[in-house]
Length: 142
Image 1 (cartoon, rainbow, N blue to C red):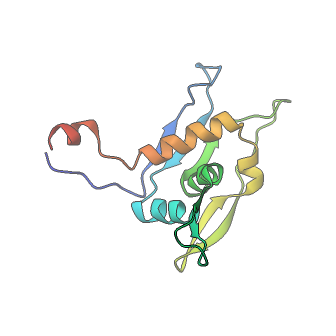
Image 2 (tube, rainbow, N blue to C red):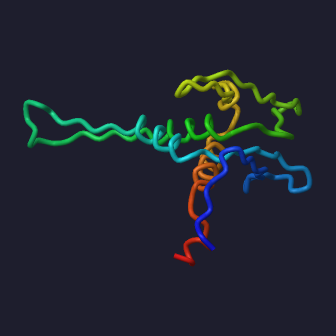
C-alpha cells in the first residue's frame, strides 16, 4: 500500500487517559492539523538570534513549547461533550473567528482553552500533532 495523505476535515472523538469515568467520559473532538499549519506554528514559536557585533559569539535560541501546545489546540480542538465544572454545570465550547492566510476559521477562545487542566492540554496537543504522522503500516512498507 502506498502512502496515505491526511484529511484536514477529519475529526476524531478522543477520551483522555485521565478521564475518571469510563462509563460516561468527556469526549474531545480533535481535528487533523495540516503540515503547513504545523510548520507555521513551529516557526512562529522558535527563534534564534546572533549578535551582529559578535557573530562568532554565542547564539540565543528560544522555543516556546507551552505556546506550541496552545496553538495546536487552537488549530485542532473542535469541541467537546460531557465536560463539566466543579458544580456539575456544562462548560461551553466557545469560539471566535480567526483569519489566517486570507481564510476565516472558528477557533476556541482563550477562555475555553483556559478551562482545560494543563495535563489535559498537553495530552490533547500531542494527540492532535500525532495525527499528522506516517502510520506504522506505512512505515513497515517503506
